[in-house]
Length: 395
Length: 152
Ligand SMILES: [Zn+2]
Image 1 (cartoon, rainbow over the protein chains, first blue to last red):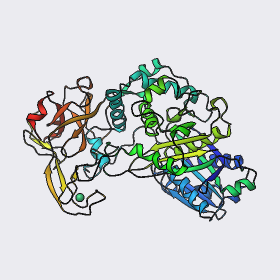
Image 2 (cartoon, each protein chain N blue to C red):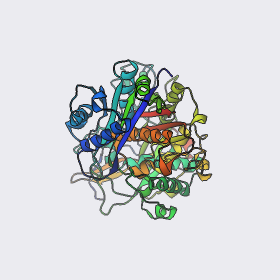
Image 3 (cartoon, rainbow over the protein chains, first blue to last red):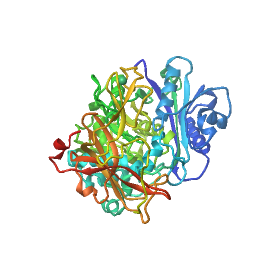
Image 4 (cartoon, rainbow over the protein chains, first blue to last red):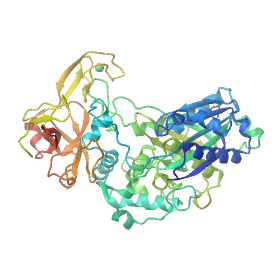
C-alpha cells in the first residue's frame, strides 16, 4: 500500500519500578531496536519522541533528549504530547516524514519514570480547574473506570467473575513475558480477595503505573527492501482522531459530559470512534484482525475495547471471554503481551510498546506467547483531553 | 455537625434553595447547555456564538451509572475522621441531554442503586471549616414513578 511504512526494529526496557531517570530506559529501548534492525544509529534521520510531563524540561523535549543521549548526529527531532496516545502521535509524525520523502529511517521512542502513589492536583481554591473540582468532590481516577464497569453489569449482565477472568487471562501470558513488570499467575480467588477500590472494581482490576521505555525503528518500504527486510511488518494505519461533539460519555477529569441538546447534535461515544479511521485507512475490517493490544486500565475496560474494535457486538465481549476466544490459542487473542495488567502504565511508552508486541507477534518471534498465523494486529488506547489512538500492523 | 452557617463548597455552581438546582449556562444561539457554566465560546462545532444565558439545570434525572469511593481521596478532598465511604452517581439529565457526576446522599450505597433509577438533586455537607459548613450537590434516589411529578 502506498501509505505503508516498515517496522524494521523494536525494543523495550523492561517495565518496573526501577527508580532510574527516564532517559536511561529510552536509550536501552532504542539500542535494542537499532540492534534488532541491524542498522547504525547514524542512519536514523528523524527522532520522534513521546513527551513525559513528569520529568521536567528534558521530558517536554523528549525527542531531543533521546537524540542527545544517543549522541547528536544531526537528525531532525520531534516531540509529541497526546497523553496515552503520545507514542502513536510520535509514530504518525515519523510516518509523515517518511512518506513525504524527507527521511528514510526514523526512531520512534517513549519512556517514563513515575512517582509513587497519587498525583494530587495543586492546592488552594481553584474551581476553574476540572481536576481540582473532581478531587475536591471526592471523584478519583478509579471512579470513571468503575462507572463504565458498573454500566456493563447493569446493561449486559457482566459479572465480577468476568472481570476477574480478564485479570487471570492476562496474568497467564504476562507471566511468560520477560518485559512485563508483574509476572505472576493470579487466580480468580486472588482477585476476589483484593480490596474493593471503587465498586465493582477491586485493586487487582485496576492497572498500576510503571517505569518503562519502548522504541521502534521505522523506514520506507524501499529502505527495508534494500537492507533485506522487505518482509518486515508494516504500519498500515494510524488513527489519532479527537472526539465528535457531543461526547456522551463522562471522561476523566470532567464532572459532566457535553450537552447534546442543540438541533442536529447527537451524543457520540469517543472510544468506539477511534478504530473506525484505522480500519478505513488500512482497508480492512474487524474480521481480518488476528490479535489486539488494548488499553486495559481496568479489567472491565478490556471488554469495552473488544466491542469498540468491532471484535464482538455491543454487550458481547464477556461471552467471547467466557468461551476462551480472547485468550492465547483462542479465535481472537487480546493482550497476549499481558496488557497493562502486567505492565502497569508508562504513559509515553505504552502505545509504542503495544506496537512492539504486534511486531514480534507478526514476525513469529513471540515465543510461548506466539499467536498462531498472526497476520494483522490492532492497538487501541485512550487518554485524557480527547487523545486516543489505534494502530494497525500487518504482514 | 455544628450550628455554623451553610455555605456552598464551590460558589455559584448551584442555588441554595430547599429544592436546589445546578447553575449552568446555555448558548442563546444553538441551545447547548454547559456545566460548569461557560459564557465565552460555544463548543458546538456548528455554532460560533458568544452569547449565553445563565440557566438552572433540571434537578431530576436518571442514573447513567454509579460506583463508590472505598478509599479516602487525596487533597483537596477533605475527609471525615474516620473516612466514611460514599456512593457516586453519573446522572443523565433529559432536557439538557448531558450526564453530571456527583456524590450520592449519605446512607445510600451501591447496593441501593441501579442504572436507570430516577434521582433528584439535594444539598448535603461536604466538610466543615472554622467558619461554616461547606455544602455541595448530591443525588438522592426517588421512588420509581416520582420523576413525572417532580418535573424538571
Ligand atoms: Zn451555540
